[in-house]
Image (cartoon, rainbow, N blue to C red):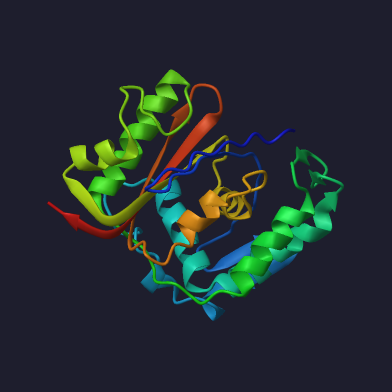
Length: 239
């Protein structure tokens, strides 16, 4: 299997990823990672950072992606040690787990681990309606058309999509897009590792200290099966 990656970074910071991988998840508090059962409640205040769980209209996968991002932000060192470090043993050259062809091999994983284990914890992100609607609309329209990238099928940009749903981002906004993956942890870890994206734009969006708000839209994609759009904003306010 070959992993395809492309990225777009602009003044307001956007990035895009195509990824394929898998992980077995058993519950919100216990996760089966290989042969190990991890009690996540030892490392995170799970109810506090599960900010999307009780919001109506979001799918379970959309909620799980927000949850995973908040875990990575609020305890980056532990997140890296628990879920990213074990990947180092699964590389043979640039092939991960016997099937996923990467561009950088284990070096991108090591780079991610180094960054996350040396940074301070960040604040959790909360879902805001304009960001959520912008993410969902882009995922659905692009998924139906089978296209990729940050420009909408109607020519819209991230900024115009957020504004069209009544929102504004005061300092900066960002967008990550994943194609071909339907597991929340794999989506987030692939974006954090950012293999082949030497700017690490996806990782920077997830771990941006100025971001305070998030939206997540998941939809079927005509070519890749699944598309996940994640929007971020700092200093976000409803109109």
